[in-house]
Each structure stands twice: as C-alpha cells, then as structure tokens.
Length: 305
Image (cartoon, rainbow, N blue to C red; front, side, top):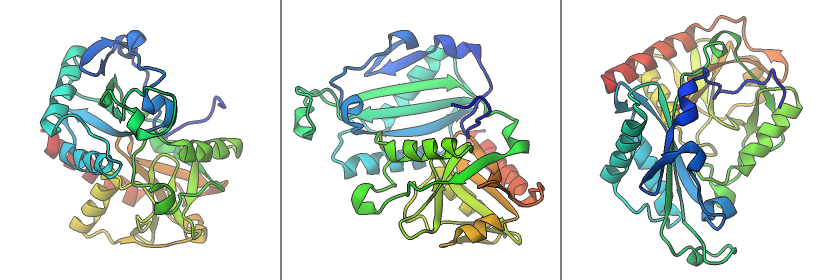
C-alpha cells in the first residue's frame, strides 16, 4: 500500500494495543496467543457476521441498534449466536475490564459458524457451535482527516443485487469491498466509491456516503448499502434539526458538483471527502458537515453520559 494512502479507519498510534487481551469463545488471551482453527468457517469460507462498536465513557454507543442488525443478520443466514444480548454485553464488559478500557475504544465483534469437520462448504459440516471473537483496541480517529479529507475514486466493482449477496449483511465475506478498495488504491485514491447495479452513487468500500448540495443532504436510497447505524443517526439528526435530507438515486454528476461530501461509520463518525476522481469537492468549507458532526457528538455524549 502506498505510504500516503489514508483510510477512514486511520487511528492515532497507541502503544497499549500491543498487549491487549482478546476474547475467544469465553477465554481472554494475549493478542499474540489469540487463535482460531484453520477449519473454522470464518477462515475457510468467510461464513460469519460481525459488528463494529465504540465505547464512550463506559457505555457502548447505540448498543441496541447494533444488536438489532447483528441478530437479524445471523437469523437470516441461520447462524445461532449461542447467547442473548445480555450474554454479549457480559462478554463485552469482561473484555473491556480485562484491558482496563473505558472510553475511546473500538470493538470488532465477530461470530462464525464454527469449526468444520471437513474442509468443505456445506453448513452442516460446522458441528461445534459458533466461534465468537472480540477484539478491542484503544482507538481515536486520526485528526488529520478532518482538514484534508478522504480521496475517493469511482471503481468498477459495484454493490450487487440482494439476491447475489445482500449488502445489508455485515458478513465476513468482504471480498467485494476488498476488490473495490484495491481498485481505488490502484487509481491513486484512498477508498473506492461504489455504484449500485443501476449506475447510481451508492457507498464506499468501507462506509456510507453523503453529499451536500445547496444546504441539502443527499444519500442513496439504502437499497444496496449496509444499513449503517451512524448513517441512520445522521438522517435522524437532519430531520430533527431542520436540515433538508433526501434518500434518493443520484449520479456521479451530482456528486462531482456537490458543495460538500462526507462518509459515515461507527469508527470515524463523519469523515469529510476532499476529492472524487481527482475533482475537488466544494471550496474546502464544510459548514453542513461541521454542524452534523457537532450534533452527532452531542448525541453520543447524551447517550453515553
């Protein structure tokens, strides 16, 4: 990867992460000793679901919304979580306590169909029950992104139709997005801007995407993108604060001519976009993005106080 490439998941360096303990099926082990079987469904086939969450002031932000998405996705692919929401909260708390973590923490909760008895695809070969792994890191988004912004390149890899692999699955099978990221890097950008099957602007390989035109906020219809928790919070905040917001189809012409553009995700909250396909977005002033960032920060503070 190019040394000047930045991503929406760039974080400030934190030496404490070298010795974190990771939750693996109920055990808490040093990161160097955290292992899963080569027969695990997640390693072998990408057969699993995951959630990204953040811990602020001892509280997991929007835990219920994340669990709604997680349990619905697991149900849709007949993946038995093996515990209820209270059990997951207990596992999260044990992992946070083992690491002395209370705030500015990012978590990746991963669940796979478990270890297979043979190295083949059929789900019935996974007979040991699910594998759950929880990785938590001390993690603050890199501040430099807020001034410079992310560089996007439109990529040929699209977000597909629901009957191929529904983008609403937060699945371990992320090759579609990895290919988009590679295509963007090869075009000299940081992340890939992905279109939907009809050629409308959809999302990036890692985050949901918004533009601002004449004070109005636009995002995709949501039909072909991850149903992002932060995405929905931004839409709700706009509606509650008299910011005109539209979930609609729009083309690259609309995106290139936008006054502002930003990405949303659990890790980075709202990350500004500096350019798309080499074209600068707006004049560098981002008043609507700044207002939304402030409103979102207030929402998180109120939720986790």
